[in-house]
Structure formats: C-alpha cells, structure tokens
Length: 284
Length: 218
Image 1 (cartoon, rainbow over the protein chains, first blue to last red):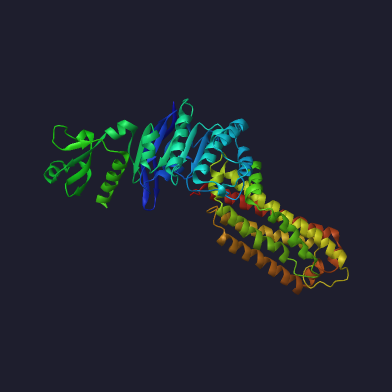
Image 2 (cartoon, chains in turn red, purple):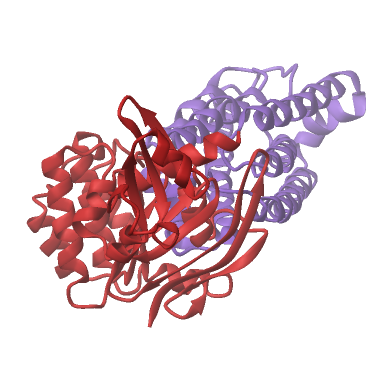
C-alpha cells in the first residue's frame, strides 16, 4: 500500500514553478526528499498538506485523495517544519492540552511514553528547548495522535551531529513495524545515506529521480579523467568540473561505457546534488 | 470550531486582554467624557497587540497543520473577536450605569451612557468588523492596512454621530434629553445596533471565508 502518492503536481509562482512533480512512498519506509535551497522541497510539502493551491495534479495519502479528505487525512498525518516555531513562550503542557483536543485518536499513554523517552519536560517552554528537542516534541505529538505518515520539512537542519544521529535512529525505529512512513526533506545528504530507504531528488521544481537509495546512487557514475578523455565524454556528462589534473564529471550510468579507461566511481548523494545544480547553472 | 476558540484563548489571547474590558470600562467613570473613546480603546490596543501576537507566533501555519477546515479557522477567530467586543461593551455598560447613578445631576455635552448610546457603539463596532475582518483575511496575517482602514471608518462614524448629537436638537433630545428616559426608545436603538452588528459581522465572515480559501499558507 502506498502511504503517499504525488501525481503530476504543477504549481506556478512568479519566477518559480513545480513541474509535473510525481513520486510514491510505500508504507513502512523512509523517503528522503533532497534538493538545494529553493529547489521546491517546501513548496512540494506544502502542496501535499494542501497549504498552497496546486494548479493541477493529485496528492493521495493512504489511498485517499487529499483534496477530498483533507480533514480526515490530517488526523493521520504528523507534520513539522524545521525552523518555524509556534507559541514559543507557552509551556509544552499548555500546547499539548490545546493540540490534543483536535485529534480523535490521541493517546495519553503514548504521549507520556515518548515525552519520557525523549527526556522532554512538560513544564518547559518551547523557547527553552534545543532545536533537537523541538523536533522530538513535534514527533511526540505526531506519534501520540497515531500519525501513520510523517511529513517533515528539514527536521535535521540546525541539529548537531549527535542530535541528528539520534533522530535518525528514532526514524528507523518508527518505521520498523511497517505502520509508519516518513517523508523528510533535507539538504544534509549524509542523513539520508544513514537512514533513507528511498530518495527523491528535486531540482529547480522538477523531480530528477525518485528511486530506492542504492539504485538511485548507482544510476550515476562519477568520472575522473584527463583533458583528452573529457572531450570524448563531454556530450554525455550531466556536468563537470575542470581541475589541474583533468576533470571530474557526473554521468548517467546508461551513458557510461565501462570499457573506456576513464576512472568511474559511484557518487555520493552530495556529489549528485552538486553536479545537477551545476548543470542548471550552465543553462542560466 | 470550539477547540479553535479554546486554542486562541489559551495560546493567542493574553490574559491581559480579558482584563482590558475592566480597565477600559472603568474609563466610563470619567464624568461626561466622550464615551465613544471607551470601546475604541479595544480597537486601538487589543486588536493590534493580539493580531501581532498571532503573526509573531506563526499561528497561521500552526493552525493550518491541524485537522481543521479553513472555514472553521475564520469562524473561530471571529468568535473570539466578538466575545471580546461584547465583553468590552458589556462591562462598559455596567460602568455606565454606575456613572449615571454616581453623578445624577451631570450635564452631558457628549452622549450620555444610556442604552441608545450603546446601540451607536454597536454600530461603530459593526463598521469596524465589516472592514477589518475581510481585509485581514486577504492574507490572514497582515493586519496593518485592515486596522488603519477599519479604525478610520469606525472613528469617522463616531465623530460624525457625536457631532450630529450635539448639532441636532432632535438627536440631542433623543440621546441626552427627554428621550434618554424613554426606555422603549433607548432599547429599540440598542436592539437596532445589535442587529446591525450581527448582520455586518456575518457579512464580514462570509467575505472573509471566500478570501481565506484563496490564501496560500506560507
């Protein structure tokens, strides 16, 4: 079953547009949604949550159309926007008391369970929490109302490596029993290498690729060679950088001929992101 | 919808705004003052502070993430506004009654705080709501222009009404003269004011919902 299905989403702003954005997230998996700043990650997430009006396309959550069943589905979605704080001067206790009334499946036991596990003190104010603790509080809320799909916009941004690693472990535990699915956007690609099952890569409002993580990385090759070798493959390269030793460039695996003497490695997610953004720059 | 109202009172509306009706209401004790100023303090102080708070605390995104309809979001916010307006007027009315008994021999140059005057205050708030609410819901967070326009209109109404109340012998008689003791006349002005307040606020709600449905929550 699909936890999330985004079909041919289009949304035009002045100077930016989402074009035919499509991807699917299977139930029980973690999907990393990557892209540079301004690539369209947040706009896509806001479109999924029906916060912005899409020009065309469809979003389905747990098999149901978001446009038709928004309120019902929001009972099953937990969302968090990194870097946006709400009612920072209110105590967590006050916030929880307000929020829980909106959810029919709210479970007090689960809530206190996660508050204890995340070492969150209800008498603290939002402003007294570290960035990592804020994300954890958001997760505790989402999990206490029985969210089946977590949509998190940059939850790991601003977190130190220890807090990030801790959070990623929690994500993996959450999806372990196959009930909860997570879509999280980030530009910190190392997070995804650690915990994502699937990767969806957006660049300039368009999905470049959406696939299982290893398949995603293996669909590209990073080539290293000298100047004369560059001339041979230049046309096929997504983009390249010239350095004193020759060049480094990214190529689709399909375009790469293994018999050639150019050294090829499987790129990291970061390298894929960088070379794709360089390609965009080349057209500007 | 009820949960949203509770949310606003627990998180967005500082307790001071629930005490403000008492503090501004007490201004009614100033003998023969321009009493239109009393409910206007609500528009001058409470509205910008409260809406500034909603904006600063990202209330729009906070609320939009929860399972609530946009229509209910508008309805709840207007309910909060109306509750506060009624609190202000209601408490000021009580202080007004005290004033009438405290200084029975007073000569009023401006409107005296009889029921008819409160009817005019309801009209003033009706005008405020009709302009403020629909303008605010163009974005659902920017309140400056909406406040400037609605305050100007409300104050213009108050100014003109008060000026006419002084200049027109008929109106002076209705509000401060012999008419002030005619309970039926006074009550009917108050009821007419309340009816207009309800009608304008409902109209404002309808326009606001239409506008808010088009708002992109950023």
